[in-house]
Image (tube, rainbow, N blue to C red; front, side, top):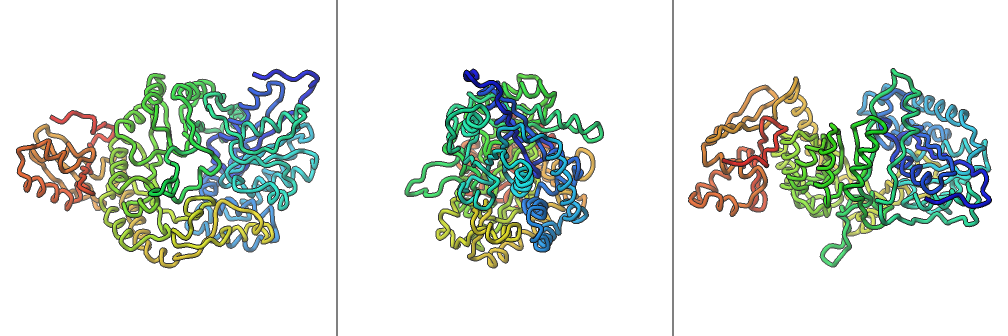
Length: 616
């Protein structure tokens, strides 16, 4: 721990701000990590973290706020109407177009939301004496860009001498020259990881240090050196809201930075990571905390704030050391409720360990149900991997959120047809969320547009609605524009959109009522097996498998090759085995791909770790 330097009598404090429309039910992991780091480096410097997104949610109403925060263009429209009132008519049209399918957003309306946000921002600025601070920092990520700019402009109008630094994912592709030309109120830009750069700025501006850094990206190599995030300010703000507006928040934690799936390019694998992803462009390499460190942080935060809900903010949960981590969480004796993002090829035993530790919800990186399309996306998984992940989560009682990415550039009719076929095999499980492809700045597709049959056109045209043209032309935003095959992709994917909507309705209808059974479930009779498929119209299809068929079906609770199945039953005639497997696939009770077979039914007791049960 560094000691204050001689001659420094009264360091000036730092204020860190998280603007709307970040998720209201959890504090900002960026502010928590930065505050903890600054407090450790400079115990003499007071650090104040303002989670303004919580105050805004209380003002707007939690349901309306959440609806706004889930749609980027809607969220950015609300503050843009305050930032550039001359653009209000065009912004209003964009808001209406982007919110037309959401009744909560339609009921709230842009004028009322903008007025509420205006009140929140003015009250926030008026309640703080900004003149005492030596530095004001704004963490700007998804849905926070325009609101952060509103706050910065209003604060600098009253306190022009206050140094302002910005950082976060929204600015990781920007240059300081372009940013300050558009918004001269911003004095410093931190690219990438913020701890080291912000500490150097704090030393220079708040403690009288002699060196003013360029705030370039300098990463901390050993993440175990970082202190646990400091969320005290968030909980103090939550307490001040009063009993009627309080809730049990979910705390963000991180076990790693970067993505271990991103690998160095080589002649047979030029793309790095998933082709559509630009989430890791502000990291260099991949680093992870030790399992012991992560478990200690979660335990410490749970003890301090009396919470049990935690969300891993990692782009992808570490696989190395995962069993050790989740075992430690089990041994803590706490009934955690956890969320994390995982790959579809996560081993079943690891999923079971996560479930025992309290993992109740995961975001599975599905993206597609066509193996050909998954290869185009550089996912490193196939359709069977994705369906198997959904099956195992269903069996364990883990809510498995996942996206079905439509209109990926260059998608073919054959890939769409494969998607439609495989959707029928996945239909018993929680529906995937259909989303349309958007071009991310510096994603592999962005870096190789010609290889994906598109041509770059600069920023997405919606930015020219939110920002004046002279600004929209000079800045590089996260969402980019392109031309090439858009109309054809929309036509190709229309049947998938329709089937996805139907899937969601059928699943919701089938799962109505208390404690619904699986849509496709099995009961083991020791020497026979009963498989039941429930249908939305309340009818049932029942299949009874005798002993040998039962053994094959239970053996394929994890995907198996044809040879592995034959080895299990060496005396079974090959034609009989092939006939049984073919029948199971035709009835959509099993899924097959590339000589691998997977049983789709899950145990009626969905919390059972069915793939760990011995097979008699």
